[in-house]
Amino acid sequence: MKTIFYSILALTLMTCSGSDSDNVTNGSDYQGNWSGTFSGDDNGTWTASINSVGEVSGIALSTTFSDTYALEGSVSASGQFQATLGTSSAGGVFTGQLGSNSGSGTWVNETAMMSGSWSGTKD
Image 1 (tube, one colour):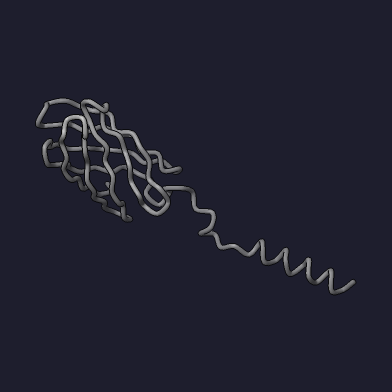
Image 2 (image 1 turned 45 degrees about the vertical axis):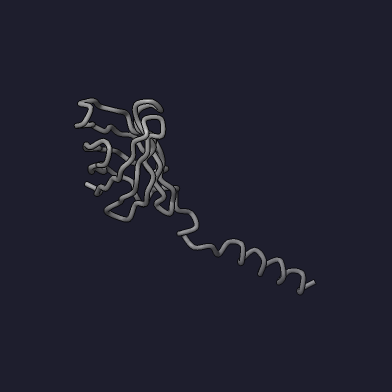
């Protein structure tokens, strides 16, 4: 009987002994305001806010086309960044990697056959 009790106790302790890092909210390490530039076939600046669950919301200003576009996307707990800029015909997809205070990657608008790179920092 003691063997069963100790086995259950040991199993309970093992399942409850996870570290706090196991409970990190998706993207919370990147939470805050970010800004940067993009270049290539289109050039401009962007600003975005990342919330505690890794949702990205912001705007990008194209100096090439003198227009402002919505920026919506997400960042994973590991810093993988993906966001849609504008629409499929007048925008693109930004992908890349965020670190604790900076990030970079590429963007592409397949419909317009345009591409380039982006970079930014946490404000």
